[in-house]
Length: 101
Image (cartoon, rainbow, N blue to C red):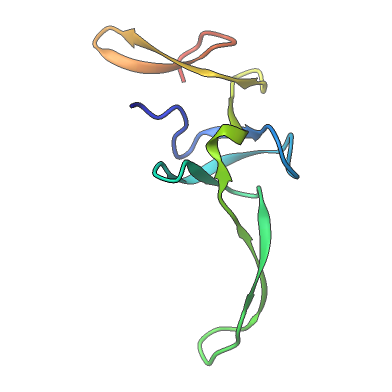
């Protein structure tokens, strides 16, 4: 099955503590159905000091469910993704505007 959301897509969060925030996808795990979006779903991780690294509290982006994300169209609105054949190529398009993504 083709992926509706891919690495590098600009997305908006639909539910949760970061509802309404936008960011771009940095990585996707299709097996678990989750994606990491930069600046979204930030958690504080504590690291122990060692000779090589400074210890302390570091912010880290945690995975978020793909169902809680929607791609952003050219107007800046959340949209659903559809597929259509453009010649011999299968392309994704925004349902709101009909433009290819």
